[in-house]
Amino acid sequence: MLEAREIKKVYTVERGIFSGSSFKVYALEGVSIKVEKERITGLVGPSGCGKSTLARILTGVEKPTEGMVLLDEKNILNYSPIERASKVSIVFQDPYSSLNPKLSIEYQIKEVLTLRKKIKKNFRFKIEKPEELLDFVKVSSRVLSSKPYQLSGGELQRVIIARAIALEPDYLLLDEPTSSLDVSIQSQIIYLLQELKNLTGMGMLFISHDINLVDCISDKVVLMKDGRIVEDEDYFKKLLNSTISLT
Ligand SMILES: Nc1ncnc2c1ncn2[C@@H]1O[C@H](COP(=O)(O)OP(=O)(O)O)[C@@H](O)[C@H]1O
Ligand SMILES: [Mg+2]
Image (cartoon, rainbow, N blue to C red; front, side):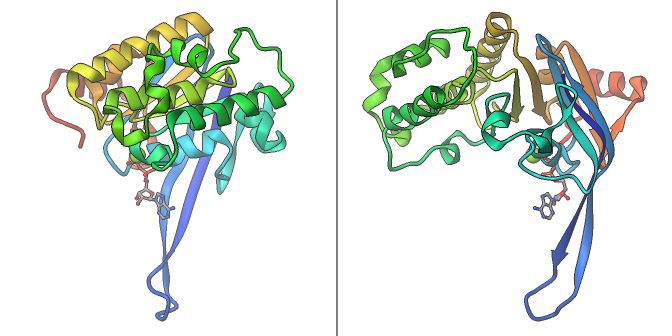
C-alpha cells in the first residue's frame, strides 16, 4: 500500500528578489489517503486545492513539511531514488511537456528500457524491445521514428503511460492525465487504464477536477478542498448530481 499520513505542506514564496519579504502558502493541511493495489482511487477537487502537491509528495520526490508517506509500510524517503521509481510512477497532464521534443519516441523509450535492464527486480512481463512496451498501451511501433510533436495528444499520452509503467511499478499516479485531451480520446485512455490495472494489478491514483470522470473510473473516490480531505458524503453526492463544475 502507498499511504499518506497527515501530510502538511507549506510553501514560502518570496515576494520579489529585492523586497526581502515573503508569504506562506498552506497547500496541504493534514491530508491522509491510501492507494491500494488492484484498485483505482479517485482524487477530485477544484483547481489549487493541493492535488498535484499531494501527488508529488506521494512519489517521494517532494518532501512534506509534516507527516509522512509510507510505501509498503516503510517511509518513502528511506528508499533509494531508483528503488522508489521502480515502485511508484507518475503521469502528468500535459503529454507534450513530459517528453523531450527533440528526441525520437524510440530514443525516449529505449532510455527507460535501459534503466529496466539495470535494476534488480523480479519482472513479470517480458519487455525488452520498444515495440513490446508499446503493445501494453496499444500504440503501433510506427511511431518509434517520430518526434513527440508528430503524434496526436492521445498517442503521446499512451507513450508516456508506457514509459511510466516500464519498470512495472506497483503504484501509478495519474495527475489529470486526460484533461488536455478531447472527450472521445479521454474515454479511450480511461479504458486503457482500467485494462492495465486488471492486467498488472497496479494500484492507481486518478486525479482530476472532473467529478463525473473520477466517479466513473474509480473504485473509491476521495474529495479534496482547500488542502484538506472532505469527508462529507452528502456534499459529494450533491456535486455529483449537479452540473456545477469544480473548476
Ligand atoms: N512550488 C510551489 N511554490 C509555491 N506555491 C505552490 C507551489 N506548488 C503549489 N503551490 C500552491 O499550492 C496550492 C496547491 O497547488 P496544487 O497542488 O498545484 O493544486 P491543484 O493540483 O489541486 O490545482 C496552490 O495555492 C498553489 O499555488
Ligand atoms: Mg494540479
